[in-house]
Length: 481
Image (cartoon, rainbow, N blue to C red; front, side, top):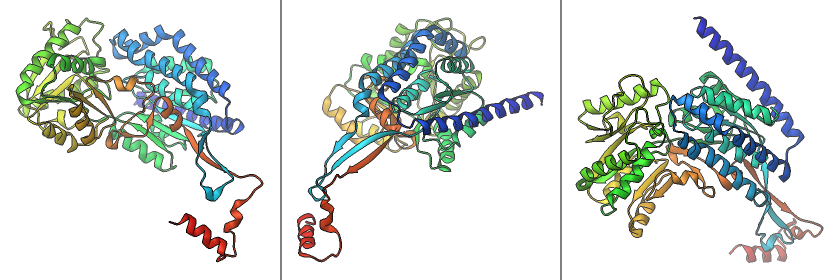
């Protein structure tokens, strides 16, 4: 009871702080609604500097939150894309900010048409626990580049990282420019209810629905970066070691706790045994041991680990065969939150592993006979956030691209499309809406304001009343045909 009261009091404090800072940022934006190029660049350079200065601290904090998180995975998936994204924005921001010229019809000449990119105001960002640094910095970069003020809600499941990020951000930015909020789910609910200029949420589809519902009350525009079940298709002729190695990397990175991790494999029925053996071989080459191996990351908390074990038990009870990929035959029953990769054979739609996004080291394998059968399997289900195709025939690659829908695609690789600076990242359907990263991030956090401008000459007089003149008829005959 005492604990609940303390939590309630803490939540109330966070919400009061949230409300005050939101008002302060709104007032500050009204005083400076169009930051200059140099001001925006200064903000980005300051952000980059503090990330580099505190790199080791972030690695340690994320490692502590996970109980064991690979240092190299944090460098590869958090620091590197965060810094590269800032560098790319700094290099291209001047070009992005310039109004774009548009065509003016002869009917409206002389005049100019331009699209001006204007900040939206105060942007809200809700950050998940799986990549707490990058998924805070990526949206922050786009929002600052677009000239906005930003409030960030960090995850309560990464307390060390969230507190560190709050500390370093408060040390470099005034609170009315960038603010970081911590706290539990009650705080996140209140956060999503604010009338943001734009709200970006990264997380599960189920929670995304609640966020969108709350945002709708204020007609807040949203970008939802969700998840879903991202398939990996193995073609009939791709070298199996090539496909298995890249799928093993994508599935084991952050131990599958990635929104674009391969969620299940579609494999030709006569190649399943070959895939299993190749996967085990390629995985073992990367991770000869797991339990004390710092390269192999832990499950974020015991609740998530129990959820994954429940998925496995459910699959077994419904007829699945489970293959534990545990190269050193280590015991994971006690003293660790780590969990080996588990391949699931004979998976079917009655099993939780085929109903829910897995978000962990479980990989169902589904058989198919013809490629259109695999495509049909994907298309009968909600659109995934990512799709992976393995095969070197370019006609077959194009066939898959033309006949499937997904947020993004990698051909003969996994995960890497997310790290491309000059490509949009986002979902479609239940895997999300809207895009960010690079120029698309700048556009997402900007109002594209069309400006039609005339000077002294007013050609529009030719269509002024009284109507019915010969000149009017000439205009209609010229432009309505």
